[in-house]
Amino acid sequence: MNFTPTAPTDIKGNIDSSLLQKADKLLLEAAKLEGSHTPQILQAVKNLLYTVNSYYSNKIESEGTHIIDIERAMQQEYSQDTKKRNLQILSLTHIAVQKECEEYFKTNPSASAYDKEFILGTHKSFYSKEGMEPFLDVTHDGMQDRIAPGAIRKRDVKVGNYIAPSADKLDSMMNEFEHLYNKSLVSNDAVKLIHILASHHRLMWIHPFLDGNGRTARLALDGAFASIKMSGYGLWNISRGLARNSTEYKDNLSYADMPRQGERDGRGALSSNALAQYVNFMLDISLDQVAYMNKHLKLNALTSKIELYVQRVNDGLLDIEPLPKHSEKIFKYLLLSGECARGKIPEIIGMKERTASRLISELLKRNFIESDTKAGAIRLKIGASMASYLFPMLVPEKD
Image (cartoon, rainbow, N blue to C red; front, side, top):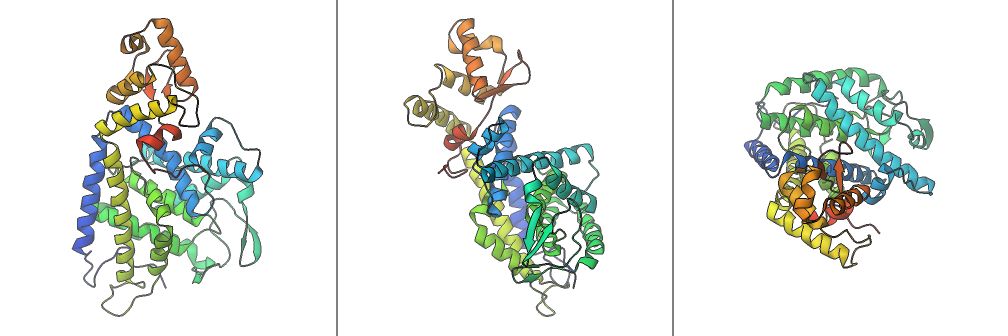
């Protein structure tokens, strides 16, 4: 048995119009995110979502650590508890590899997320990172084994009730995956998008690695969005939706494993109707996440939320130190303008240069703003604490 069809098509090879319409809507709604703010604010949101994506992708595997702890790890503040420290490292690794995937397609614009080299390389990069040693030893079917980063598995495996393709077929299967899915890259954007979502299941079905297939497939999914230069990519997060609907996600993946059910069920080895249900689920999840970000990225809403956040902090209602006086003036200015020269801060806050300098230093130290150089322009930095007010329920509160 092979993994065809590569997309949910009827016996004539056509994709259902309802799926194409949803894909078009997703492309349109996601593109709206790009025009919502200055490039600097959009980049601040993208930087936040790297951490959020890491949290949720690992949570799907029941190995998540809260973004507050991830941010601490970014500052080299690791837990004394070995298990928690390892989970912090796992999250930092996910962030690093996602960024590498994006950079790969920037520097290799003709490359494809379906290329075997990219998929194996993503797995290798993830499990070769410093600190990932504790995650290499795994148990499958009662057997102890060790992950070889970037290597196709050499033995057969069973995942729950699913028996993955035999190991001796994997190399040719990955070559076929690359060949068949790369054909879709000449299609229009809606068709490309449907193939991307379908390919996520097909890669999980092939199950090329001994372990780490889910994480690698979700990183490859993010890479695929980046590779087609999908407008709005990075400003919404599919892993959040998948983790919040984890049971349905896994059920739909399992359902799409179904063999073809008769001559009217597409023209591949697997069920086209089952794949259509899975793709429809993925489109709905994506649309929901894009709608969430479009709602909360509105400028007026963010401005009022920043004011409320500063007020709550300074009233002692949050578990952090009070913010320096005039902080909200800087935050609101940066929200509107994207960045600000340091010499303009005294004018913004109506105070002398020395006071402005102390304020900038404090906000830099506490990671509320950032700058490329010691004297460079400053930009807003959206961390977990502020994000909890700007984007309600983006992540659950820390226990």
